[in-house]
Amino acid sequence: MFAGLGLGWWLYGMNPPKKADETDVLERARPDFYYLLSNKYSIDELYEATVIRFNAWFARVCDFLDEWVWGGLVQLVSLTVVGLAWVNDSFDKFVINLGFDQGCGGVSRGGGLLSRLQDGKVQNYLRFIGGALVALALFLVWGGGK
Image 1: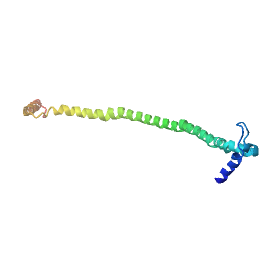
Image 2: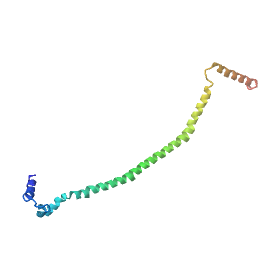
Image 3: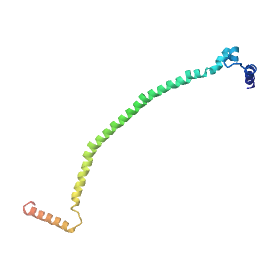
């Protein structure tokens, strides 16, 4: 650090420029060092040529992967799920609903009709038994027992 301060004082402090448009002391003494220092060791150009170009290339690769590979994969999976959902819906409507659900509905309606016979009123039970005895007697009288 002290060497750098001493060198700067020796170049610029001992012999300061007289006019603003005068050439730099280091530029007169060592033009190659002056060029290197004035271009910041060419770090910006090196950074542009390596990091920035790689970042731009990698961004294009990621955009391609996102749009065509991952986006296409998501589309494929979503269309597969929609297709399987359609198959499931069709199976439910035309197999389950038409078969099992309608069969259960018929059993339920039959149970509802039969439950009217069991309403808890003894008079209705006696009427049913009386009607059945009359039907049995008529059946036997007309020769249904031979």
